[in-house]
Image (tube, rainbow, N blue to C red):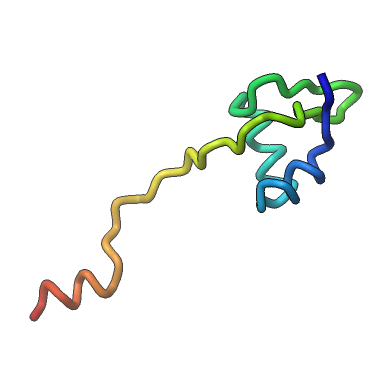
Length: 68
């Protein structure tokens, strides 16, 4: 299996290296391995989904629409 670095994966997926590192740490990238403090990611691994959630607030436009 061929591996790429965090920087290469970030460039490939359009993410920051920090987000890729976060996904690796959280176990969202299958096959990612940490060797000597460096994450190695399988070249064919799909981009992980963003697991962050919204806080439930409505946007300002939604509030204005309700007032009308």
